[in-house]
Length: 200
Image (tube, rainbow, N blue to C red; front, side, top):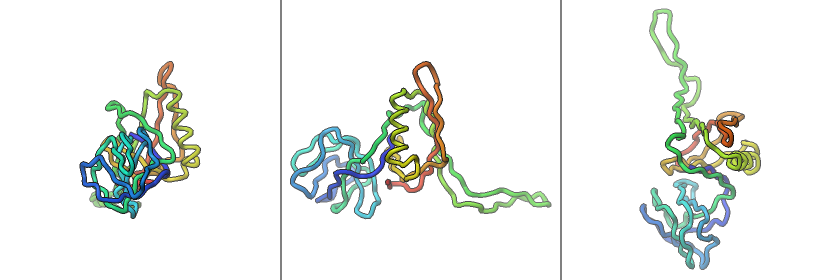
């Protein structure tokens, strides 16, 4: 999974890329990417944002990515590298828990009947509870939050374990860091999932 913010080296797609394709043609003679650069794709209107992994090969106006497009990308859309990124390898023991908030308050009448009152819009929240992060990873996360996110003020992109990109924001005004062993740390925070196949 990874967290990213902003765009750099953005280029326009010259032709459609069907779902399953790893090769993308750009509207430029040369591309501003190198092998190993992180690559996102998306439509011109900001939809269909997806994580394509790292650039595998860059030759002329074509780029081959580590992962194939799931959504298919249209000519006129774009590829870019994030301006800031924090990435962690997926750990099945530490996958986040997704909570669906219905925005309802159940009440019970004098007669014993239950009824629901809408008090907020429905929402989805992702709960993260990492237990085995190194000091270097903790510091990289702190810098990611404090600098490109302006201490958590700005929205950003979250790519979940299923490779779905979300536009997100912090659901709380804090995150927790504490030692979990002699050399490792625990990191706990919540994200509000604002929009699927999107980013910031």
